[in-house]
Image 1 (tube, rainbow, N blue to C red):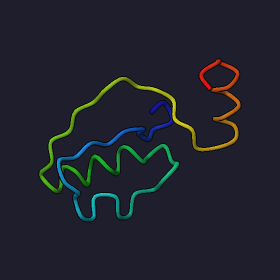
Image 2 (cartoon, helix red, strand yellow; image 1 turned 135 degrees about the vertical axis):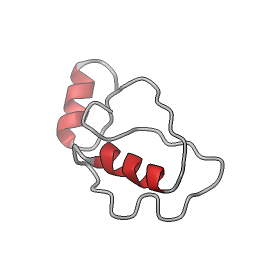
Image 3 (cartoon, rainbow, N blue to C red; image 1 turned 120 degrees about the vertical axis):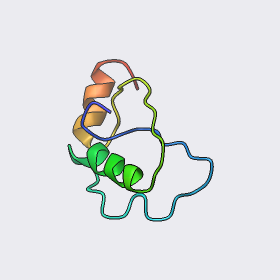
Image 4 (cartoon, one colour; image 1 turned 90 degrees about the vertical axis):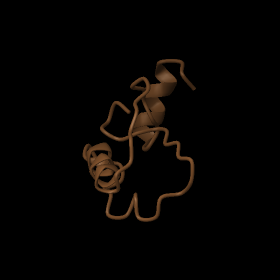
Length: 68
């Protein structure tokens, strides 16, 4: 997402520990998750960069843009 995280994760089956120690709602969220995925030998693909909604500020910004 635009803030350094992600808004969608798809897996064939759950991957134990993939999200452990990941700093949520941080500019480092995606980076940390990608590092964990690489360490686990997982393949990664990307879609469009979009906004997600973590805070009231995110909500107000998306509402102002007419997205919600």
